[in-house]
Length: 504
Image (cartoon, rainbow, N blue to C red; front, side):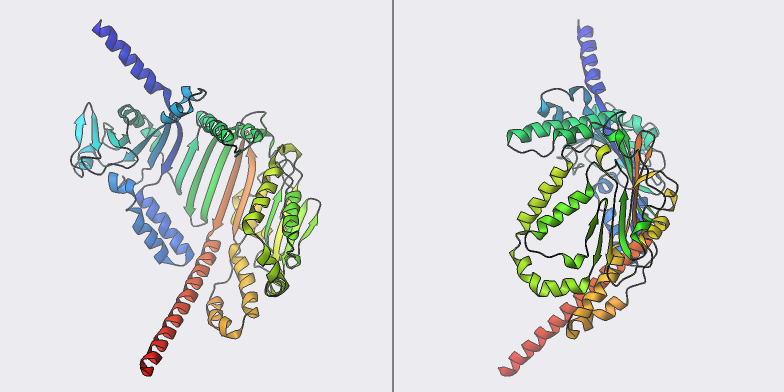
C-alpha cells in the first residue's frame, strides 16, 4: 500500500512538472561580451568615457554579483515557464501563479562556484540558498541551484524541479552568440499564453469600464505563431532584428505579400533627411488619412502649420520645414495660439484618432503610402535612398514591403545653424564655436526594412556607426554648452558676492 501511495505521489509530481513548459527564452552574452559591446558603442560615439562608464556598471548587475563571472564565450539564459494546461482555464489568478522562471548560468566548476558562497544547504543533489542565510538572487525568495555533471552550468529557480529541468537546456544555451548581445524567442505555446493573458486582462479591464484593446487586436495577435529577436553590436552599428511567424490564413499572414518597387525611396529626392515607403496591404490603416486627421486636430486649435511645408496627395505626404518661418511664427502670431493649447487634451484627441484608424482595418485593404521630411535650405550628405542602401546593404534584393531611412544627426545639422542665425549675437556667440566643431555627416543613418520569408515576417533596424558618432558629438556639444552656462552663472554669482562685500 505504501509503495502504491509513493508511486501515485511520484506520478502526480511528475505530471505537475511535465505541465510546466518553456514559453519564452532570453539569452544574454557574458560579461566580457557586454563590456565589449559597451566599449564599441563608446568608440563609435567618439566618447570612450561613455563606454567605459557603462562597462564599469555591468559587473554591478545583480546577476553577475550573485553568480560571479560567467564562463567566457557562453551565454546566460533566462527561461520563462508556465503550466500550459491551464491556459484556457477560467481561473486566471491560478494560471498566473503557475508561471515560473529559471536562470541557466555558465560557470568554471561547482566547487569553485560554491567556494564564493557561505550558508548554503546541500540536499538531494540541490543547493538551497535562503535569503536568511545571505543575499539570494532577488528573482527568487529561496534559490535552488542544480549543477551539471561536468560542472560547467548551474541552474537556478525558486522551485527545485524547475532548477533540475533547466539543465536540459544547456546544450541549446551553449550555442555561440556571435555579435548578438541579447536574443529572445517565444514559441507557439508562449504566444498562446501571451494572447490568453491579454484576453483575461481585457475581461478584467472591461469590468472596470476600460477597453485597452479591441477584439480585432486580439484576433490579429492570434495570427502570430512565434517570435524571435536579437540586439547586435558590430562595427556597422547597433542592429535590432526580428522574425515573426504567421499562422496560415490569418490576418497577419495576409500582410506584406506585395513587395515595393525597386528603389522605393527615390521619390524623396536629395534634400530629404527622412523618408518611408509602405506597400499596399502592409499596414492595416490608411496612413495618409491618419496624418491628415492629426493635422486637422492641430489646425482647429488655431495653430498654423504653414512653416512645415506640408503637402498631401493620394498615397503620399511630404514636409519641407522652414525653420526661420517657424521661429518668426512662434515669437509672434503663434505665441498666443500655442499658449491656448491644452497639451493633455490635444494628446488625448490624437490618441483617439490613432486608435480609431486601426479599428476594423484589414491589412489587405490598406493602400500604398510614402512620406518624406526635408529642411528648407539644407541638403544632407546622402539622400534617403542612398542612406538606406549604404546603411543596410544586405537588404538589397529582398522583397521588402516597408522601408525607412532617416538621420537624427542630419536634422541637428540642418536646424541648429538656422536657429542660431535667428538668435541675438550675445546668445549665439557662445554656442557657435561648439556647433562648428561638430563632425561632418556620414552617408549612413538609421534604416529599417521588413520583408516576407515564407510564412514569417522579417524585420531589421540599424542605427549606423555614422549616426552614433553624430549623436555622440551632439550630446558632447550640448554638455559643453551646459557647462559653459553653469560656469558663467557661477562667475556672475561670485562677482555679485564680491560687490556685496565691498558695499559692507
